[in-house]
Image (cartoon, rainbow, N blue to C red):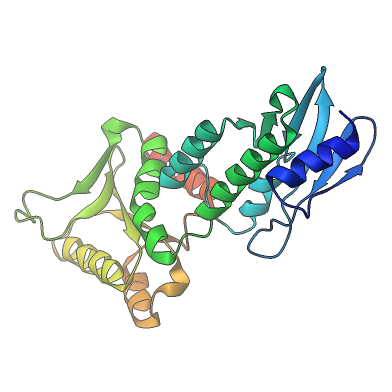
Length: 259
């Protein structure tokens, strides 16, 4: 099949605005009209590998979306992405999206590739309400991966000083001289609840340290944030700095049992 045939196949199945640019031997940049939310175009490359034509984004899609400070590797987003790639038969090879072109069906393959990238891009553009729905799951996923099951209790309440479960702790980490309370805060109400819970344990002379992980700290009112800051310990402005959160929990919280 000639280059002109490939372009025509792309145009018939996807868009008349498709074009190809040769870049080396058996390697072509595929120009499409499809763009990310910021106006950058999808990056799609057609290249030949071992007598097989392959469409690939050369890891550009995930890299591009990472700039939006969105965790696409955990929680609901990750499941949606995995399901989309499976349904479109697109392979995620270490962040590179790849699809073999079956039987020289170039147009069909490109159409599928564009749909897959669009579906993935859509997860990064969920509204704040939809993101809020995933925040708790992402929070639990992070804690579950770092904290051993025998040392972490979600939705903890103290049976002696809180028999009615009025002052819950999102996750209590034990095994240290004093436990660590980890709070998730997505809005002002959760911020105030975390503040009240910390005060409650202080009033009952219970020793504890605390960590607060915000969905987006900039969305919390100054008054609520100031009140929480008076009683809380370490704070993370979002789940974005995942490596820093994991490192802190492992070294400064879980590691305290070895000191």
